[in-house]
Image 1 (cartoon, one colour):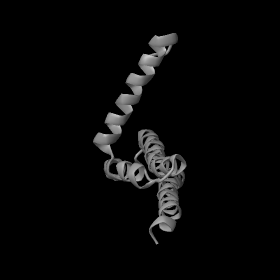
Image 2: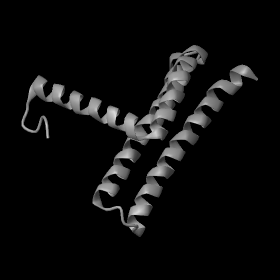
Image 3: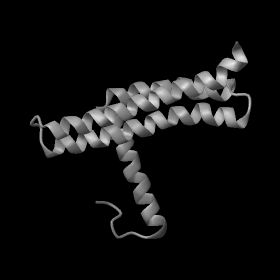
Length: 123
């Protein structure tokens, strides 16, 4: 594992490199991540344009970025579960379902934030 005994800038560089590898792997193997990234690609500029204050812009953009964060964590859980075994097991299924529920919750949160921020301005 790169960066195991590194310190200072070398550790930060190794951590950054590993993070980029994680983004690439998720992009390559996870359709949901690609869809949510497209949502962010369209939604972040829209949020920056439609938000009228810094707080509104932060809420609109942050709620979308949270979806990506939760999807990354969910994908990590799924990879670990699959690494352990492809056999059907109640706990493996439960872990994947809970991760999926977290992603759904983050999408619902983003929807509520966008509605609460934008509806008063556009109704």
